[in-house]
Image (cartoon, rainbow, N blue to C red; front, side, top):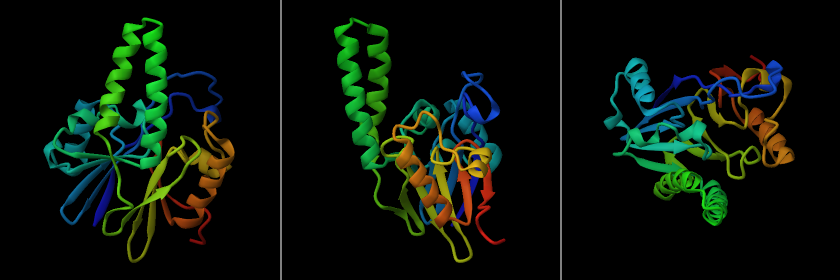
Length: 225
């Protein structure tokens, strides 16, 4: 089994950089996992053309080679390029799927009542993507397991990659950047800040290496390297 970062993400607004409003288009870090007969792409947050270009540059593979897409959470920043992988099976945690589904249905009703056709169309696209996403199994492939990290979103879920010498955690937005890791800080817009802090602690406790939600792979500073 092997994995690599395909593209490094960024936050639209990083309060640890003294930013108070969005100054860029946010997108998640995208990771590729190749194991057994599965080729899994995690959080294709860039537009499809950009994601597929990065795949070719970083791994020498085409979109058709992706067998599965996994979303750590459901938001534009994590799934902007997902439609480029029509041949793949799309996965998300069951808890995130249920929470987001309920929210989208409620917003669709409000938009319909307000005769907001533009919002209805946008929400309809989100609903179509979510409907295609299946609840991910606890184990995606041998050595790659779900690791629930709720708080930033209700069902935010990382992936724990177990290898003989190291344990690597794909964190999603549970730990977005190196600055957040160093300061022990979670995102201000977390749906449940206390739960997000608990998930942050669990992530740091379990992993040797961390693939951060909006940053690169980094060694866990809590380990006695």
